[in-house]
Image 1 (tube, rainbow, N blue to C red):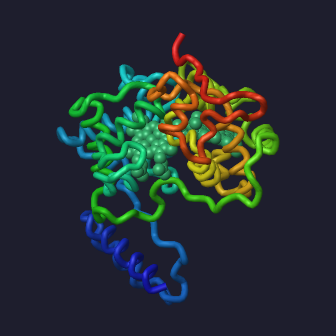
Image 2: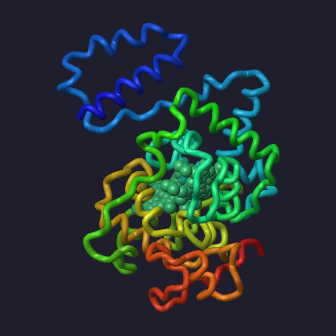
Image 3: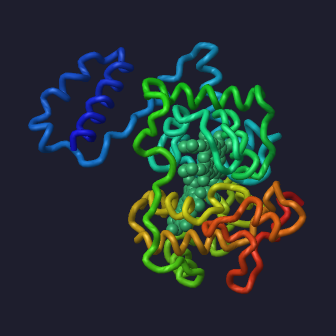
Length: 310
Ligand code: HEC
Ligand code: HEC
């Protein structure tokens, strides 16, 4: 309880400290009756500055460009994108939404050691990873204008946060292990009931006028076998908090695990680290129960990959 109150106070201070234009913002907080009794159990979430606060100077231009790239990388970072997804499809509200791996949850936590790469990744290197795998594209080189803009956007959004302290709402939620092992057939039923309306019966999403309206969940235009969303626990956490869109946290944990398993038991573009053999690639990069790469599900050997572009 003490820790929760403390972090609330810290968050309130941080907010008022960066809110130069509204010093009176502190007053309503003081008037709130009986703060100890009515304090929410969950720690306060960081509130990133509104888009309208992006400055119009040269730095602000990079921030605004970073936001555009994040929302529509197929247009603003075309050379590095190999599918129909945008960053925002998995990092909702232009990277602002808590529990959907927001940029303000990530920026203060790098450089960090990552077991995926066995090294300390800078924030720029982390951005490169999402191009290689989630976007099934290729990483912009260090110092590239695309990385400069994305990094400026994330830095601007994180202003006022402590460095190296994982903010509440960062990443995707970690769901408790399911009561019964995730299952393809049950997942398929959840998919038909709660997902197919938008993502299509075949999971291929919907396009209108060359733009993705509902993103594909598998197949040639989706994330590849090296992406974080390929791990069933990551997908289950994202889905539980954010899907069906607009009705987050309405699925049971078991439904979220089952539908994540169903989604991740479909073919998608090959892992770019493919060694030439599925078992060897599994041993090198997918040696976890959370990955279905190299497993046989529903009679299909997974990990054969589908070509990204014709
Ligand atoms: C298919 C979904 C998907 C897409 C598309 C996607 N990402 Fe990600 N991203 C993830 C997943 C999954 C993680 C890991 C989240 C976790 O560890 O909780 C992640 C992590 C990140 C992180 C680190 C988050 C943290 O808290 O450490 C950053 C930064 C990031 N992505 C940026 C981007 C950018 C920029 C793009 C577009 C170029 C992009 N992502 C596209 C799924 C996606
Ligand atoms: C009302 C429409 C709608 C429904 C229903 C819906 N989604 Fe989504 N989903 C979206 C949209 C739109 C996005 C992209 C969000 C954005 O860009 O802001 C998305 C994004 C996603 C993503 C990340 C992007 C990708 O292609 O991998 C996954 C995974 C996902 N949805 C899974 C599901 C699952 C599983 C269900 C069913 C439990 C579901 N969705 C139900 C509209 C929907």
